[in-house]
Image (tube, rainbow, N blue to C red; front, side, top):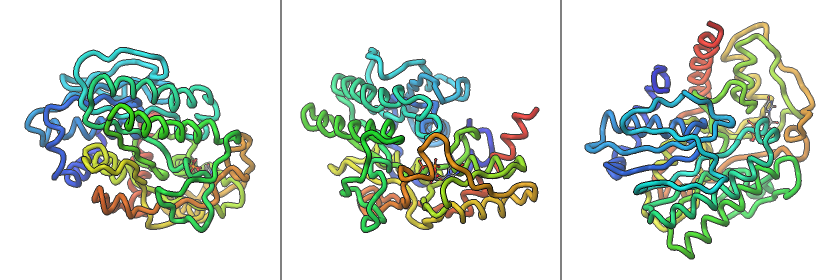
Length: 357
Ligand code: UDP
């Protein structure tokens, strides 16, 4: 996966950002559920990069994925990286020692979690329980759970930027609930297993992470706008386009996950995102059109038939409060929106060309 220039540069950047702590991975074994997904793949590629460039003793990486949305054959196996096909919502046995467990298995795109609702619930609920059972048996150094900024639902505007302490404004039976509620119960399982069985726990809450390696048919706003603009098609704007998001480029986010994974602080829960440029979707549309520069493309306002977007279940604003991540993890996102989207466009243009061949 690291063969594209943009991705290779990202991996180098991540490796620099974590240079003071990456030695903790020397010779360790890391199990990554959901390692074929967008976030998981960047993690696996980073560990592979560290093995080849900086670790004295390589780490072993075991990737598990059911490939429901992650694409098979995108991860190259080697002497230190192995891939197993496993649905983590089914109980399973993991042989050998494991030092770190990372649970990044989920369906984060509304398009896909709407299509696979029960699988999404199972990954967050049963999957988390099963992995925590394994963590208990293996005596891990840390268990990292990928939660979501969706645990905040549609935050009250008094809580924008949103700190980790905010309890959320979430529907338990709306169109997004099959994603949001398993993330919430997943967190509940983590903190209770952590307390009862003495398992070190870290929980990260990603805020709209984007970058190379996302499926171009993922449906989320950046890949959707960018691929439509490149292809000269209309970009679809749901609702009035006044809803806002903040976007975090994948290299910043990956440094954040690794800082949380390797943290020995007692603090457990961290927002990971970018608090720099909260932007309305209609302005994001203009920005993408301007950066891609394809005169055949324009904006089309549309109603979303799934019901997850553009109505009252679509959060109207989202922006993280990063005080805790900055202070405790020394997390420091650097990639601004225009720079990050330009990188994504470059990668997506090449990806579209390769797929056309
Ligand atoms: N959105 C849009 N057109 C698209 C995809 C998304 O207008 O083709 C809007 C959507 O209504 C939402 C925002 O972009 O307000 C972010 O959507 P995304 O799926 O990327 O993430 P999430 O809603 O989960 O934050």
